[in-house]
Image (tube, rainbow, N blue to C red; front, side, top):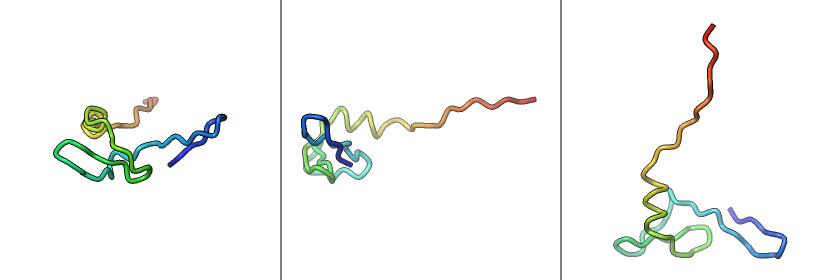
Length: 58
């Protein structure tokens, strides 16, 4: 998904889950076709994000 800023530049919200492996540690974004930072890719794929909502038990 790309987003435009006020100064007409495009910003990509990288798709880390569907990244294409280019080298041993290099991954490419399928949306903008730029190389992703290996550390950033690892962090985004290492953690499981959960929904933390409070529930009232009465």
